[in-house]
Length: 122
Image (tube, rainbow, N blue to C red; front, side, top):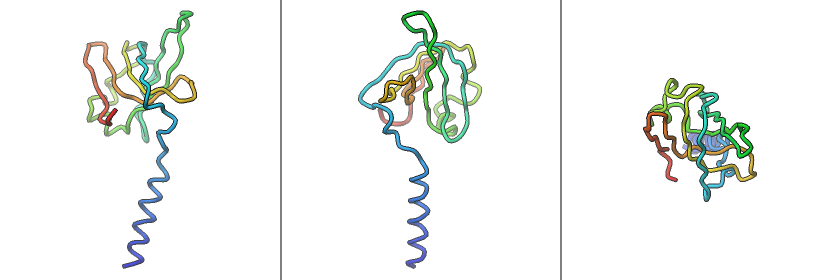
């Protein structure tokens, strides 16, 4: 019995350590980014939306938005073919704490006006 419990603890502990923390995102802040999808990376372990956002000087700045895993994003309605390069969208995200242009997905407004919100409590 002890061997079984030790094995379960090792497996659960190992998988928890393998997943990264979300501490790099400032969950007390939200940014709204209107831009053009550069790339939609629908792959494990997390989906990424690369978004080109116009800056005040007119130049586009790339933002990297981390989403959930592919199965969760698909259940939310953001399957692999929903976002394409060139799509105009607005994304809400928790920004990176260090000020770099990245964040954690909260919601997206698609070009057709449809809003998709994260399943994770915000």
